[in-house]
Length: 131
Image 1: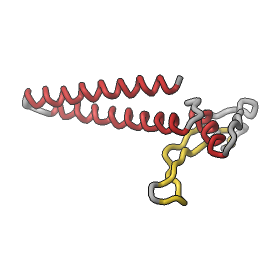
Image 2: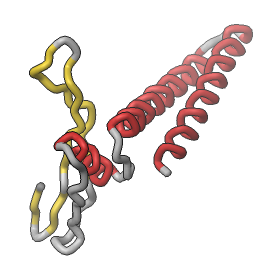
Image 3: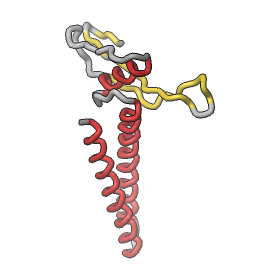
Image 4: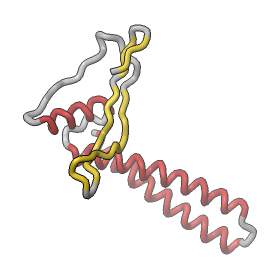
């Protein structure tokens, strides 16, 4: 919980176990709320285990509203895939502009089009999971 000039921000690092190391975590993503007044801060502590409570809190702070680790993990993965895909599309479009051969331009354009379709599918899945 951060406090600055009477406003508060809740931070939560979403973690998972490191593969092959049962005693260490890997921070997957850090979620943060907007700056809130003291009256606006509200986190429900729901669940029977610490893991369940953590997942509910992660869903609230992230804005996803998830209560299961699988859903939160998939949402984080989808956001990363979408961001990476958009960067790849931009790189492909730059290559297309710089390429002189028409057949190579067409090939790169096809790759960009396929990647855009995949990004659209990921965005659709992301929206479905958020609901």
